[in-house]
Length: 94
Image (cartoon, rainbow, N blue to C red; front, side, top):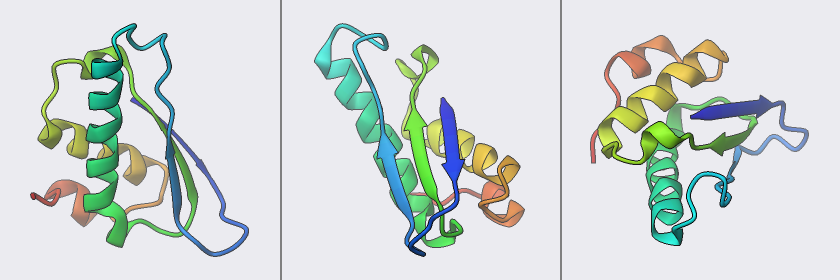
């Protein structure tokens, strides 16, 4: 996945997910990728610093479960400085 982070001008945490036909021609697969990313963001939302985030799935997510996707998102947000390392070490569960 690709994570793009920008500062928030209005002090609100915002997130968007982009998944076009380049990811997959099947809408079922694109929607599943969007749901996985939204759910991962929802679980981490309370710990993320205020910023603007755009999430773009990559093809290796086609067969992934939610747990690894959440762990990958947490690791990427730690590298971007938007999430504490302690959260990435033990990502939340449903």
